[in-house]
Image (cartoon, rainbow over all chains, first blue to last red; front, side, top):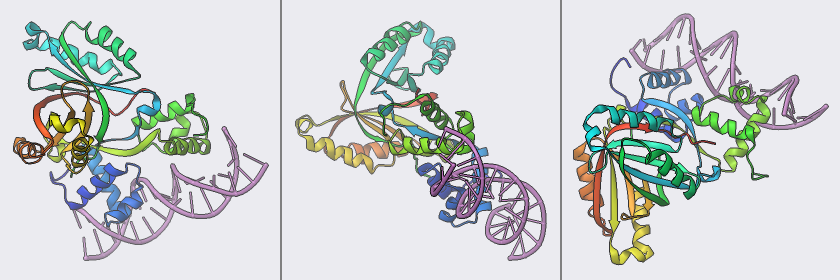
Amino acid sequence: MSQNELDRTDRRILAELQRNGRLSNQDLAEKVSLSPSPCLRRVRRLEEAGYIRNYVALVDPEKVGLKLMAYVSIRLNKVLRSSHASMSDFARDVQHWPEVVECYAMSGDMDYLLRVQVEDLARFSSFAMDKLMQHPAVVDMRSSFTLQRIKEITEIPV
Amino acid sequence: MSQNELDRTDRRILAELQRNGRLSNQDLAEKVSLSPSPCLRRVRRLEEAGYIRNYVALVDPEKVGLKLMAYVSIRLNKVLRSSHASMSDFARDVQHWPEVVECYAMSGDMDYLLRVQVEDLARFSSFAMDKLMQHPAVVDMRSSFTLQRIKEITEIPV
DNA sequence: CGTGAAACATTAGCGGC
DNA sequence: GCCGCTAATGTTTCACG
């Protein structure tokens, strides 16, 4: 981005595309009171500068049979924790597990927090037993299941 | 949806649109080896049947100044917890707080888990003090901050 | 499911403020 | 610099085979 600031129009573009990622450039231009070509140029700039990470369709997990969601907090082996090796080993392995849709290193009394999306309790159990517990870096693990989705948005204020 | 099953082509469509929500119908048709019109009919069916919840642009929170992310677990007032009133009051209020991007009712020793996205610690502090702690239903609150994003995907296996 | 045609959208080049 | 016009090219969409 040539200048490091977003102006009001850029923010409106981001807001609209967060709400509807398939908005046509023409409709978007109208919403932000611009003609299509400068609008498209701004969108491209926002994409290239990394403000827009990507465009996705959000699929309903329940509809495709992923009816169980869990948060799992993990503690890593104490002797390995300071050595950077086990942290990045675990981080690398997490990338290959399709059940894990989110993973963060955390402050507080856990090391990692995972969000896990699976078919049912049987699948969760084998994920937990065969993948998480078997991992050499993992010493402790606590799971909670989501009972109800209250709010889930991808839209952030701009 | 007329039949309750997704065939192999529907699954491929969902997979492609999860990876790129702005794929043109023409390119999508080519990827799933269909011509554009039946491809579009399938996409519309998937949208209408709720398999596709919506299309969004994912904006990088750090780029727009939301540099702090926290998970907050909440316990509700014991006497109000069984009465359905305070649960749904809290759930309703959460919808109006833009800092909260996710909220789930949970099993285990917390009632709700929130994911909160804010500018900095000062903003987090005022959110926690002025909104969460002030809420009549909330009796206890524990926060952890994310130190590093290891994985964050919206794509689920179909 | 695929074809074809009309309507519509994207995008690059250029001139103007 | 950033806007908007134009015009060529590409895409969406729907009636029909």
